[in-house]
Structures are given as structure tokens and as C-alpha cells.
Amino acid sequence: MKTHTLLLAATALSTLAAVPAHAKDHEATSADQIAELREQMAALMARVDQLEGELEQAEAQAEAANTAAAEANAAAVAASETAIAAQKKADEAPKIAFKGTPEISTSGGWKFKPRGRLQYDTGFVNAPSSTGVDDGWGTDIRRARLGMAGDMPGGFGFKFEVDVANSDLAVTDAIISYEAGDVEISVGQFNNFQSLAELTSSLHTSFIERAAFTDAFGFVRRVGIGATYGKGDVLVQAGVFTDNMDELSNDEWSVDGRVVYMPKLGNAQLHLGGSLHYRELEEGATTRYRQRPLVAFTDERFINTDRFSANSETMYGLESAIISGPFHAVVEGHWNKVSRPNMFENPTFFGGYAEVGYFLTKGDTRGYKGGKFDRTKPVNPVGEGGIGSIQLNARYDRLDLTDSGVIGGTQDGYFLSLVWKPTDYTMLLANYGKLKYSDAVFPTGTGDVDYSVDVFGMRAQIDF
Figure 1 (cartoon, one colour):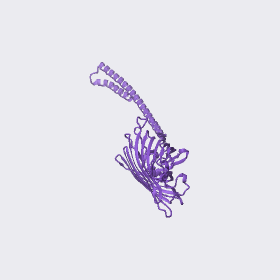
Figure 2: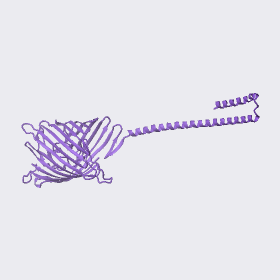
Figure 3: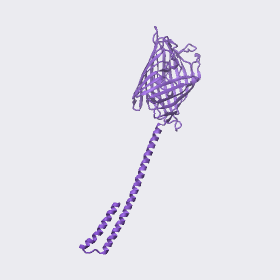
């Protein structure tokens, strides 16, 4: 600005200096014109000073605005960094989801959830009085389990659960697992890979007990190592097992395999599967196959092979099921061929069932996941303006324990059940059954071993 002022002043002086010289060649400029010119120059200088002041003020304002903008940008960057740090801290903090009980998880791969279930059964068994069977009303704490399950970083997981029903303590699941992609390896005590009915949790069955053959053929948790491969519609399971924790001192071992194809057909879920089981018994062992009349609160078993010598057992089973909206149907068959020593014939026993079910409440359907039935979640549960889900089921169940000189009897069961689930984690169930026996263990007063038994059972259940 000072440079501009000096230039203007110099220009003005040169103009004034030129006036006398020019007057020598032309007529003299009047004094009024000179005075007017001087006034104009003075006004021009004043205007220049004013503009310089305004320019300095504008530059100061611009500098202040730039400073404020820089400070605001720095504050915004700091706020953004603070928000990112807070979000990162929030992401790293444990998250709690409520699934019956709190499930705690972290972004680092840790997860922990306590778990448990309580099932209280009551009902009656009505057999011909002349058999001398201890029937009538009975009650039972069917299951009272407590445990925990979770995941650890690196693909590892665990599950541990004990059953304390009726003051007894028994380990049910005790599993260490490792998952890598589509493959999961499990070590410990767990269900070996047999039967859709057996592998479906007792929390999600449609009757008070599973199919008769599952208990009769000794399907229990065993200690071993197993692998599961699941991708798309295909599930493959295989494992090598010893025996239950309570009987690990023996020399028995078994191998099991199961394959399931589970495609979706439109809105319907299809299940097709098969399993194979081979069990080598210890030398000199005996075995026995028997079963209760549906309910577990009685110790009476109307069919029973009694103990007989055996070297091994080979079982194979077929599974099929469909779920379509409120409707489901299941058919399973299982064969058990027992190899006996010396000159004994090798018997083959059979168990199987056919079942249909239908939800009476709109929108409800049976749960299915990972090659087995899963939790039913009522669309309109109690507490949210609904009544929960109501399901009606019918089943025919057959168990044949007579073959090749072994007479254990046959049991044909005709069952009806009504299942009410007020919420996801509660259930009330009523179950009626008529069981027809041939070659029953307990004869009537006239020696008859072919007769019928009626049973009725109810269950109250909660899990978390």
C-alpha cells in the first residue's frame, strides 16, 4: 500500500512541475484551474488513504477468518479422532445378549453363556392288574441340568453340563471343540452320530420321550473324538468312541458315521439321512435291550431281552423328515444286528416310528438347524399380546426285540401329544399313549403275554 501511495504522489508532483514549463509554450493556466487540480489531488490522496485502510481491515478480517477456520478444522479432527477411539473402545467392550440367560461376547472372539434346563414329569401307567406291575401315578424330575458353553479366540469352543435330577450327579456333555471353516472337531463326551430323534435335543421333542429304539438300543453319550463337515445342504459326521464316563474302565469301542442331505424345496425344509454304527464289546461281555412304556417315571419295562452273550453290534438307520409351514412329518427306521459267540444265531432287532404334527396357531412352525430339529419360537408369545404356539402331534412307534431265538417282545405304540409353548424357553406338554405288547415280560393271571397298556404323561419345562 505504501508503494502505491508514493507512486501516486510522484505522479502528482510531476504533473504540477510540468505546468510552468508548459505555460511557456502555451497560454498560462489560470490560478483557478491549478487550485481545482490541487483539490482533486487532495481528494484522490484521501480516497487512497481510505481504500488502504479498508484493505488493511479486510486483510485482518480474512486472516482472523482463516485462523478461526483452521481452529475449527483442528477441533473437528480432534472430535473425529475422539469418536473413532470411543467407537473402537465400545466395539472392544463385552456385549451382552439375552437368550434365556445373558450371553457375553467380545470382538476378540470370546463368548460365554450359562445354560440349564428343568423338566418335571407326572402321569400314570395303567396295565392289567393281574400282571402285578407297579403302575398308577408317578412323578419324576426328568432332567435338571446346569452348565456353560462358550467360544475362545482361534476357533476353539467348549461345553460342559451336569444333570442333578433326583439328587444324582452325572456329566452329560463335556466337550472341547475346534472349528476351521466348514469342519468342526470335537473331543470329549457327547452324543455319537445316530438318529435324528436321538440328536434332537430333549428340549425340542414333540413327545414326552424320544422314539423307543433310542433308549432300547443304548444310545447314550460316549467319550471320543468326532468330526463334522457341513456346507450348503450337506452334513457329514464321523467319530470314534469308547463308552460313557461312568464306564470308561471297559475295553469297548465304536465307530459312527452319519450323512444328511437337507435341501429347501420352496418354503419346505427336507431332511434325508442315514447312519452307521459298529460297536465292539469287551471279551465275555453280555448285553441287554429293553424299554419302558413311553414315560420315564416308571421303572417297569414290558419288553426285555434279558442279558445274553455278544461280541459286537452293527446298527444302521434311515431318516426322513419334512417341515412345511405349520406341518411336519418324520419317518425313521433303525436296525441292530448283534453278533453272538460260538454257534448262536445273530439276531437283528428293529425300531422305528412315523410321526406327523401341525401347529394350530397361525405363523408357527417347527424349528430345524444343522441336521436336526431345533427350537420352536412362537410368533405371538405370551407377554407380547399372544398365546404362544400350540401344536398337535400323532406318532406310531414300533420296537421289535424278538429274533433268532431271543424273545424280548414287541411294542407297538400309538401316541398323541399336545404341546403348548407360551414363550421361546417354556413348554407345557400332555401326552397319551396306548401300547400293545406281544411276548411281554409280565404275564397276566391267565398267562397271557399279549395285552395293552395305557399311559398318560405331562411335562412342565423351562430352559435357559
